[in-house]
Length: 218
Image (cartoon, rainbow, N blue to C red; front, top):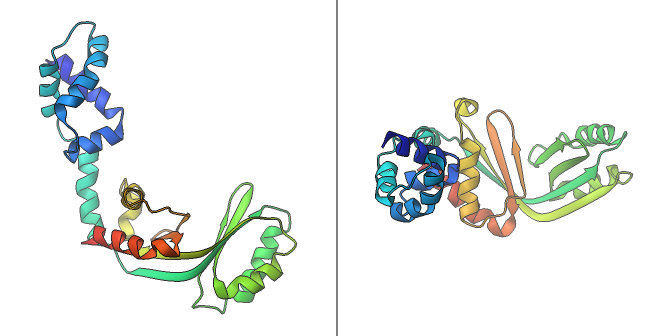
């Protein structure tokens, strides 16, 4: 039986989503045993009764996901303030020798707009600027010499202040994004600093996004 238990555990742990669904009791154990039967027999080199596999699944000790789940729930109870901003644009430019200087000049120009939202994200080949609608005109003027790869409008942001221990806990971003994905919310961009995370979504999804994330705190 020890060999069966070890083999079943190894097979299940190869799929984090499977382990998660088991921990949340979302999977029919008998159906899972039938699914694993062929692989278990192959690894052990002999025919195994499906009932033994069912028993091995039911006897599995709480895994890594269960431990993360317990810590995450305590963590989410300590989430800080939520801030919502609407009327947001997303611009993506191709990186160039002049782009970073243009960004610096633009930021200096609009730094007094403290009520506006603005974020820069520099990648290897492209860079993204996320900014409030009122900054559209000056942004277009400053970046007219740069190659615009994409522009999305009618967006909104939800920013969450995270507890300081967020960088020490596994799965924080996974749980946040999973909650939104299950509700069919398309996350356009994710912006993070040490103790803040911002989700950029469409205006039509902002209420649903805010409610979903607030539910994690309750």
